[in-house]
Length: 363
Ligand code: KG4
Ligand code: ZN
Image 1 (tube, rainbow, N blue to C red):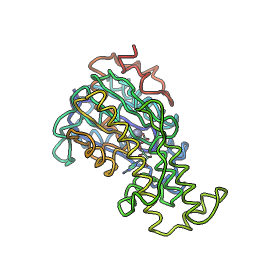
Image 2 (spheres, rainbow, N blue to C red; image 1 turned 45 degrees about the vertical axis):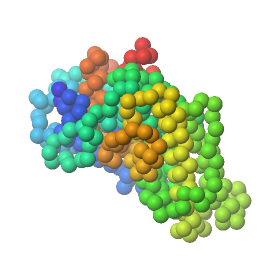
Image 3 (cartoon, rainbow, N blue to C red; image 1 turned 30 degrees about the vertical axis):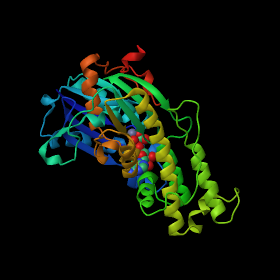
């Protein structure tokens, strides 16, 4: 079964074809990073307009890269939630129209669940050349989800059957990366820049606090972000009223990389401490990480060192936003769910993973 996936929830327009929920046949991602970098963040209206410009060519390329025609496609999976409303509308309208005109079943999937399913891609067309995991994760599977909008620990008992163990009580970890990057003067998108800078820094140079929460699987990242701001202000001899946009110019390179490394150590320890607690309590057969921050080598290294099992990570390009993960999830969804009505599918900009139609345990 070949599923065409379509993803447009934020600032990447993507389409991909995946066979049987495991074999990647094409993976097209058109990133808007260059457009938004100019403004230091994603501008929703510009994102939506840019999706409109490229969505058709991106979908056509996903088919031609896979050497397929519409006759070969068995279904269309599309991100309907969560994300920026204008961005979601472009992808879902394209998917709905194609489902009607090409007469294909339509499968709406949740973006964050999609991130988890990037870990199920274990085969690929020859030309793609990605380093993929050697086998699919086994259940029960512990998923550490770390993206720009979400930070969650989820225990999957089977496909579409999962429990939320814990989640961030304030900022997502990717959001904290992006804010710390701004304080330190690294360009958008901040996560990759801080991740790279941290390689050259001293992770113990600046002591930063770790939040203590009642639920051992919850996280909090707003405290450490503010702690970085205050520590930077202190470091340059200013008080808390000093404007953050003037900070980067006052820091030298050593201070910047040391702050990046110290922030990254504390945020990684926060995530890995909780994952380790969940691992001990639930004894999962596999552990996966998902979402943009899962592209961080430092996080992968710490998790592998702390957990007593071999973790096979998805390639970086399948951790950040893409449609391969959406097509993959679409396949498993199609095994147990009826397709959506293409005339009626609506987007939901904000909905948590536990409330989606796919999570059987909530029915
Ligand atoms: O999953 P994603 O691509 O989009 C959302 O669904 O949010 O995640 C984007 C987030 C951003 O905050 C970005 O700064 C962060 O992932 N990110 C990273 C890295 N690559 C992307 N954070 C740390 N290290 C990286 N290498
Ligand atoms: Zn994402």
